[in-house]
Image (cartoon, rainbow, N blue to C red):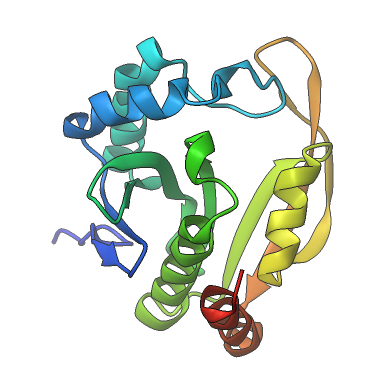
Length: 199
């Protein structure tokens, strides 16, 4: 007897963005997205250099085949791929996922796309997949990322000290946040308000 993968491959669509299954068809747009702002030069986060985008797509697709990641391309309202995000560290037995490995081209940062993508991913996790909790992780000194996670309404679970070795050889302490199912209605109301309030 074979079991269907969890979470199943899906597409999520909103007003400002869509999340579609990642494929090599997105490579050209994502190379341009990586070059916008020279994002791969940020040592405390991991964004592929433009030339490395096809390999990064293949890496994520291999993890999807192994059942540990569900990768998406982030499309803007015109259908252009402007970034990547995933469900990762998938734990089907306890219905828990991490939203991570996320990056966007610089020109769409601080706009509605990230907020709407997080709303779509969280809504699908809690209302479609019946998750018990959704996790977020980031470098403890990536203050921009930590502020963004906290604005979602996620709570800090703790710091995993000496958790990872970065590409430049430094040791990463990882800040771990989560949102639990009972907290979701409040987080959802807050995210929906953020999308409609004047900017």
